Length: 451
Image 1 (tube, rainbow, N blue to C red):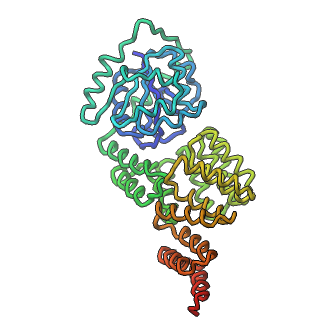
Image 2: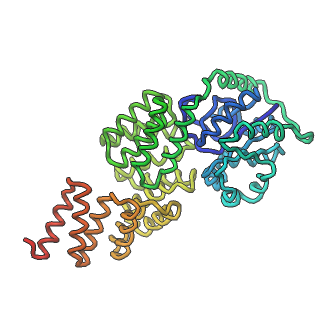
Image 3: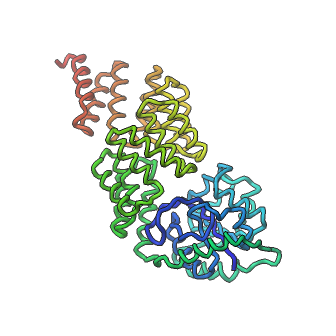
């Protein structure tokens, strides 16, 4: 039986059954990668038993999409919630794989988790591609009826139609296939605890960009409690800690992730992040450059380097890297937001607002983008517009001390001294060491005659 699985999910990495390595989304015989939904870890574990020639890619290497897809009769397309937006980019690997499977006439079988939205197909895939993902050949997978779904897949969908022919692979490719099959077969079986850890991880990951950092930390902590060697969970929890300015906790998690998985695909980005916090920007830039060199298709690598350039006030370089990150991932809201900051640094206020608008369009709950847009509006004299944006940022993130502070500054400039004092009070309550808030509150009180 010749089977190819297209991995249409973002890898969030269990340490077992697969190490965290650089991966494309194509299919090869590499050790199995962890899917974003625990069901698909189960699917992979069982499918390995069904075919000695089924594989999922962790590197592009010598096994290419063009040579491997025609060598297999079946193309299994795994669909989980939120995994198709990336396919709007015509250069995305998932989309390329699907297009190649269609071009070569493979038996395409969508494997669909129960809460996948079929509307995503029409929204994110061109019609000539999306139309080939018919529901009639799909397998719906439920936790409760997992075994039944796999049996249906095996019995009904993996019988090779007579019209499908397969191509021979080269001797070199076949040797690599056999090697990766052996690697996959030697991996430890996935345990129930690991499945549970992945589900907690997914909960945290889905909160990204919603400014719910405490909830993210709770989810990642639950995942780590189940799987103490879950490197990606430590890494993601570190990011959440940073967003809450809990730097000691962030450092501890980064070091723990690196100790578990020294070959993590984002190791250089982790080191760069640590060096940024230590204000060692030149050293951080060296690590970021290595990250880009090793992973030229990783949007986060360009975004991290751009952040360093921005901190060093090299705004043109920062914008160039954010451009590249956005080209790789057109739905990268954070890259639009941060590019707006860089444009603002160059004095391009209107360009900055356009980027903040785009970030908010992609993520309507992006409190930081509203805050940054408010700052830029205030600098352009649109004070009421700035207050509206600060209001929204605070609504989304009630602990946003600097949003209260900046709103207080704008209110004071409009003559609303009492409103300004109330905002400074709130900023101080959230951050008792906020010296500027104390200072400006004192000025506001003095202007009211409270000497």
